Image 1 (tube, rainbow, N blue to C red):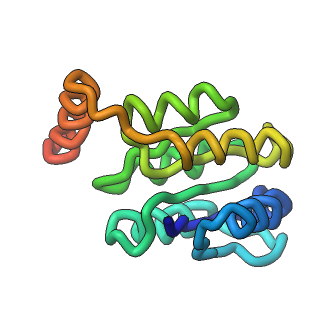
Image 2 (tube, helix red, strand yellow):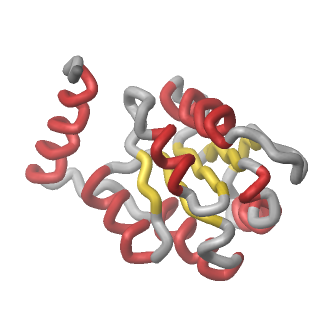
Length: 150
């Protein structure tokens, strides 16, 4: 499984722990930046990761910023992306199982490396349930993307 990774300066310290976890657990990671602690706009990195997931260059995406909120807002503006902002293991598991989320966002200022690994593991190892009600609900999410709300 190939995972797209992106962070801004607010997530730069957690990213090495994430990359190490992915490598040690047999995942391929594509790192879209950022690559140092200089201030950058999170939007740019969220778009890169989500485009890779949308175009099926990567199977899933993971975004890290200070809180995870900005990244998740941007990600959910991109058609075909269902990004979940998670700070706990249960939510990470449920968003894969019930929502078929394809991008995970979290904040370095909110969680530490140990909890991050638990959240990422839950996200990456939990399959979509494919239950009738969950499929129906995900299809409704996709249909909303086709509407032009003004």
